[in-house]
Image (cartoon, rainbow, N blue to C red):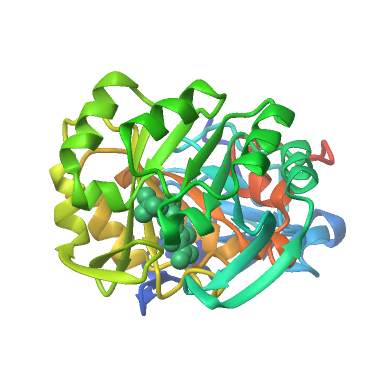
Amino acid sequence: MSGNEPRLPPHWTAQAAALGESGGHRHFRLLGQRGRGQERAFELAALLDPGFRLVVPQRQLRDRRHWRPGWQQLPQAGPELDSDPGGGQGGWELPQHQPAAAMQIIPAIDLLDGQCVRLHQGDYDQVTRFSDDPVAQALAWQEQGAERLHLVDLDGARSGLPVNDAVVRAITAALTIPVQLGGGVRTAQRADDLLACGLDRVILGTVAIEQPQLVRQLAARHPGRIVVGIDARNGLVATRGWIEESRTVATELAASFEGSGVAAIISTDIATDGTLAGPNLEALRAMAGASSLPLIASGGVGSITDLLALLSLAPLGVEGVIVGRALYDGSVDLGEALQAVGPARLQDPSGSSLC
Ligand code: AMZ
């Protein structure tokens, strides 16, 4: 910043302190406005760095689903910020600076009997069927900009046997983006076969707790391609389709894979999974702190605001988020979500200035 920028009124400079947290959620509040008419932008603090804020252009404000926030750098705090710039007019620059790595948004396809479904809190008796054409669904998300797809063989997770392999193979063959699969991968042979058949990564849940040594061996054999799935209820790990509960503390299991060569840990909060109620940020913060492995958050995303809240955990190592039900029911539009927190978030698709 050159020093010639319009100066900010004090209530804008105070926005970082005004943010709060409760119930595991970070609040994003509309804090102010500047400009007039189409030029008006509301400002939303989502702090990775108190030197930045998010701005949402006025023309997108009517419908939250259309928000495409962009980053804007705040001038250095100083005595000159205490005066009003005069109606909020003036030319702020487009965001130039990217404060942290983008978070990858990974759409999920959970397969039951060859169909795309979502379970409520992992309960096989509470099934919503969304599509009987998983390949078409996977292609749609790829076209909307997904950079990776997450597949779960729910029949496999429950039974320990591969059930949806035909669909898994069809999806993997149809897509150009990397695909990862979890659910029922319980032997080295099965993991080897899947990785030889076009899957980019396999996710090991039950095996991670029952045979951790097998995870280590596979991680050594397939560097960057083995992911540990830790699914927790009240902080304790659940396995076998979440039907069995262990006494293992999720954070301790995460810590035990430090240095093992696994590519990442997927942390699923069972209580929020499939509910759209918002992710369990406290649990994620604890998981992120338990190891230095990259963490992928899963469970509860119901809005773009939830994604922005997760973005605040990116500096702790949360590098991706799995989104399921919210994409199917339209609560989150993948393109908009990528715009908000993905690699494209610095560009305003209309090509015009954000402010
Ligand atoms: O929803 C469920 N009941 C469920 C689910 N989504 N049960 C298991 N899984 C997923 C885990 C992980 O990705 O989140 O299956 C995978 C673990 O399977 P396994 O067979 O290795 O425990």
